Length: 394
Ligand SMILES: NC(=O)c1ccc[n+]([C@@H]2O[C@H](COP(=O)([O-])OP(=O)(O)OC[C@H]3O[C@@H](n4cnc5c(N)ncnc54)[C@H](O)[C@@H]3O)[C@@H](O)[C@H]2O)c1
Image 1 (spheres, protein in one colour):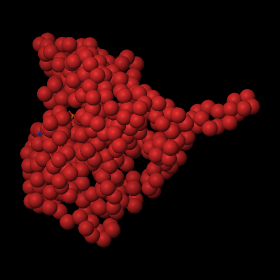
Image 2 (image 1 turned 45 degrees about the vertical axis):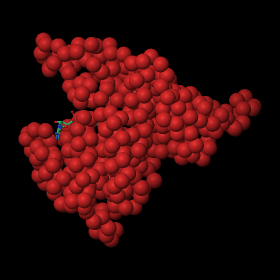
Image 3 (image 1 turned 90 degrees about the vertical axis):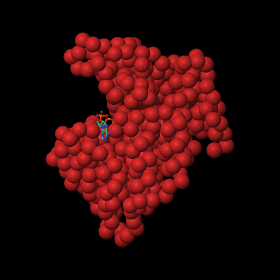
Image 4 (image 1 turned 45 degrees about the horizontal axis):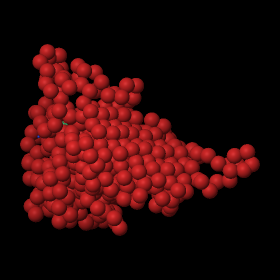
């Protein structure tokens, strides 16, 4: 592999140099965190350097230097791959570009932090998974909702058997931004650039969470709908284009473990903002989480005393707040927020790139989500249940 970096070294003496591709909404958010990660996590075992940023336009590349603090900007991401100083590529472009940037980064021997979804479709995802698993480079996916302390605590409890057997789950992610019919076309509304609509954009997050917490899916039955079928080709234009992606999607799920579930996602849900929530009910307990109320995990233990007068029976509000296990700033009693969950995800990526832990979530997790997306779209087209590749006994 060209330019393969040496990641060994004394704790604290190592530098990880970042090359970011795509300085849009999420690229900027990642940049804020990369710049401040050593302040959020004073125990960060490496020095981070914002080395280069690749953008589509020269203006955006200049912005990445002037506002983002990168040493240089370019409109050709291959320049980052050819830079021997860069050891980590952060992929923040529209979905259709993940595949080629990912392949170029692995070819150049770089670690990868890749935004969700892994790829545009299952074929690409399969190839990316194979390449990643054949490589010794660290690949981590930005399924950032896993990194909210309440979700981290839910995972611990589930692994300790708190839920018993999962009987059913309900997970939803609702936005409202696409309800305005004058919102113009963009890459997210273009099938060729996004790979799908609300199901890909929002569904990839909740599907990952339910695979992570409730277990593998056996089969899905999906229904998708496009409410606004024509949109202006660009802001203010009177010319319309046809929208080929879903605004809303509903999945019924059978779990490999025998339980059932519902996933519902929408970009046209009136009155919502960024409303991700889930509940999982098991034979011994239940958990609930709502990202609009993110400081608490709600847990129910069926073993609690029910007498007298209800005893201690009922949901308990666990103060998960900002209580990350490492020495994060702000401290554990502070409220948790969107920057904090991304920062923790990025921190875990750096620990993995520094060789201190395994990456998680990996390209395989991205691939498993892509399998569900692919099966769901097939189910919606064919109006029938679609089996997922069997993972019984995993
Ligand atoms: N994890 C999350 O919470 C989260 C949130 C938002 C977006 N995302 C994901 O991040 C990715 C980007 O989404 P976004 O909201 O930032 O989109 P965006 O449109 O705001 O930004 C994408 C940027 O990529 C740039 N770009 C396009 N082609 C490029 C190229 N060849 N080289 C370099 N840059 C190029 C665009 O100019 C734009 O600035 C998507 O995959 C999306 O699914 C994840």
